[in-house]
Image 1 (spheres, rainbow, N blue to C red):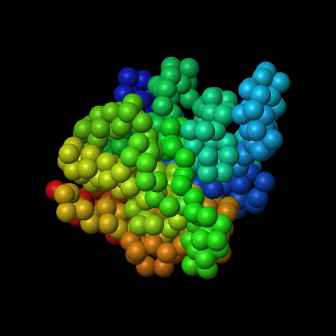
Image 2: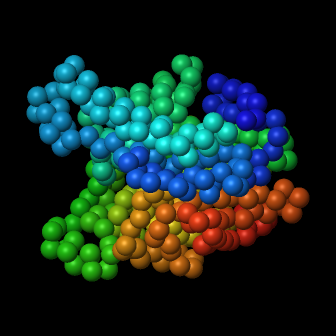
Length: 359
């Protein structure tokens, strides 16, 4: 394992050597078989990025209702903490996960199931309990900025020296996210025939994904010097509209991020996401900046049979267990995005020259 230096002021990690291979994935049910860790390890990545649903720790509906109607109590909090902790304990005992984690650094954000409940956001009543266990499991130090941030577990890391510097930005799209805007039952039944989810774009002008603090922090991160920027989302950003959870459900927030990239002139951005239980590659050209690529890898153990439409998808999706790789060729100034299956076979691949991600 490489020697790491923690710079707490900037929330960055700086290894001595440049990174060339990064693995990533999401949706790892702790009670399902996870042979995929062995395939990931074969590539000897220098970093593993976990994009959410890293465990499935959904709390009981009755506990949420009790907190809503009666308020939280010490007994209820203890029950919730025991439940969530048990799910992380189960993942920590997975041999493949344990072996890879002992070899390389992991960085992580969360999605709904490790946040605490399917599709929930700021209305989830046990955010503080879930956050504490998340940060403990991912070994955040007592002085970690993530411990004291009011608006979530967002974080950023920098790897390598000037000329080969990789910035990893992990957003928190749960802690302050506004409520979803669902369709009625009859409409959803019709949507299901097209493999679409139950949500519409939220029409509320105040609906949000992030928050003022996280937006300010993100702008500062995009102004940092980096040769390659990786933005990790727990839900899809470029997918045009699936009806499931995605940034498309909060169009003003989605547009705000695209505008922020144009404003800061942040180049060489690659987007990663999870959540869907299928893998796919998406592309969007923004006339204010350049063409953006997003590779979705989901899940490490979970699968889905009904892939939703996505006009920004490039090629075919893949709906079985998978993981993602980023291979960086610093000499050629290019990178390759890959999706691989449990057998380590290449399913999706895309080469991207750095010059195509510039203003």
